[in-house]
Amino acid sequence: MGLSASQIPEAPKKDLPLWDVKLGELPKWVGRRDISPTGVYFAFKRAELKFHNKYVHVKRGGIAPYAMMLTGYCIISYIWSYDHLKHDMLRKHH
Image (tube, rainbow, N blue to C red; front, side, top):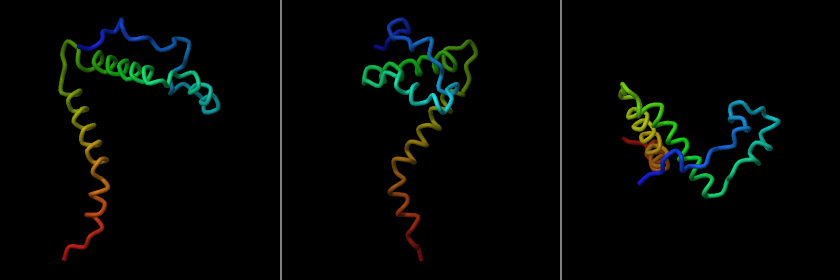
């Protein structure tokens, strides 16, 4: 029940990617972004499609996309439980 690439609005073509933006132009670049909930949703959908086209939908796929997802899950799980782990690290066990 996903969306196809033709149903997702494209990002403005005249705009530069974030890594090509100079520091002084950053406020203008951020001002041109669509930060509404719909715009953010479609930005994530575009990123998901790019990921799938680059790593999942290839002729000879490997373990890379699954390793990336597992690594991301591990990092997010650690961040979510860090507050609890921080208190465990500060306790003295003797």
